[in-house]
Length: 409
Image (tube, rainbow, N blue to C red; front, side, top):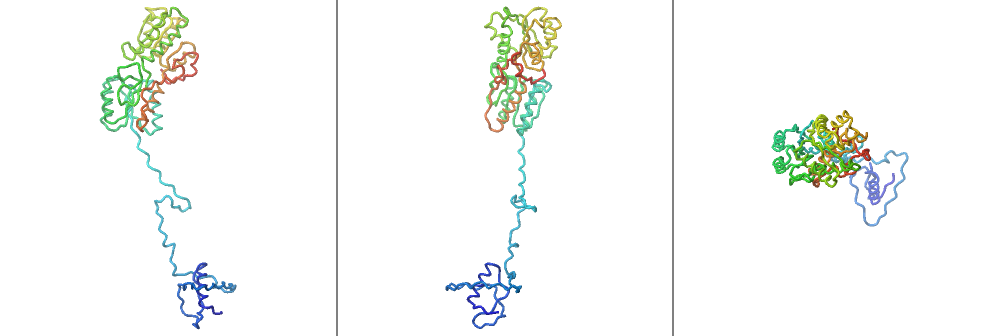
């Protein structure tokens, strides 16, 4: 093998290092040194004097040493790679895919106490079912407290909720109205959000607006406003009658909400001299039986009349009595509640009309108001659920197909 001058050998070393690694064996220098001495593994630095690099020699097809041998002194780069952090989501798994990060723990749900006047009441049952649907979609857990229409029991339950410190908010269906004021103020003082539902907590029965400062929302159709709606339907029922004799069945005469509703009706019909109230009764909110008893008593003092107005349960009972007496075709029935029997009666032509009741909407809106309050949103204030319904919630044969009852009555 021919000797290669040292200068060229240095340049050749650089070229080989860049392409492969150190050459396994090299030739002697150009100053008469004999080959065979131990070679240093570090190549000599390139001479910057302008010598051109020698062309690479053509490989000898028969020489198996043309492939450079691995340099055992070269650092083991694999060994120097840091071990992957098993918790790093960007580190590929054995299959070559990037591991997904562990999901974050869900937020703790809000806790809301629902202080119901009665869990057995079918109106409030409809409200609760809609509350639960909204709560489930917004990470809220509801605990219901059944006062069973017992004012003292509801007061105890309310105070227990506040003292427990376990709740973020309260939805209240008050049995005692303004009597709930001290407990509402205590709840607000303890940092709870409060929404009132279905009943007036205050002394003004003409508005749906909250009457306790700090309450996030009050969801209900004000009794006086609903009474005016009954008055408007009564005027429609009497439109072609002069005179028009009307029977009015209270829920409970003397109850503030009932008296406010009657006041609203009286205000409307006062502008129509042909309309007069000829008899009154009380259905006691006892279902059709209360209406049956009231109607039988009324027929003793007013055997003939044109229109009967009352809560749906009372009108159901009145329909039974009037049918038995053969007078159903002579009396136009106006209900208050929008229950299944009311909507069916209007659609079937047996009832003239009714003021719609929306307990499901009330429950949904109340919980939406609570969600807004708990999450830093705006207060909803006073909400009349009938205000956005067709014809302001007045149901007649002309529009009954636009209404779907929300409770059984």
